[in-house]
Length: 236
Image (cartoon, rainbow, N blue to C red; front, side, top):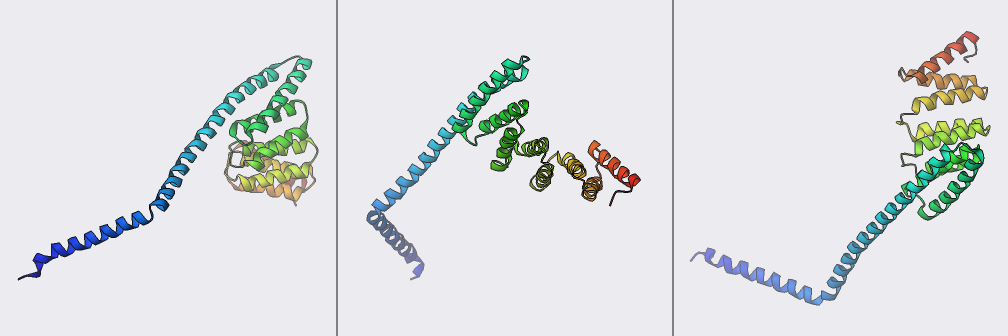
């Protein structure tokens, strides 16, 4: 007789054996398996709770920011100097408490940006620079970071620190090479080099901008500076 008739029984025996071993494994390790499953469930629940808390904090921070922005607008439109001074102190105090509570959440970064504008209105360039420095250095991935770095350079220039301003703009090109402000930054690197009396450095900055081949106003200004250097015989 052919052995084909016995094959199903052999397969059933193997399946039965595997099933029995699997059940034995489950019985022997039921506490361990239950613990692992419990931990997994707790982890999933924990992630959900953290996500909910984070979302709740963000919503609360956003609501508070809206109030701060309203207060900022009131300060910004105030015509009376005494009123403006009083409002600026109030806005800055509110922002200080807000950023202490919400750290690096986006609304807190926006609030720092508003604080920098208030400091700028007070001509407190150092405090404004500190606010801008924080934004680009602590949260460089934020869309607020590039303009904050440019503004920090402007504050350095207002403080008379031209070399620091130039270095910040140079670092900007490294950190944000694809930012729309690149041409403006390149021109201002050249301008600051001129102000520092380093004409070769200025000429190099302008030439790099021209070499890009763009036809914007910054490139045209760079062309005009190169022509000026050449007519004065001071390009090198």
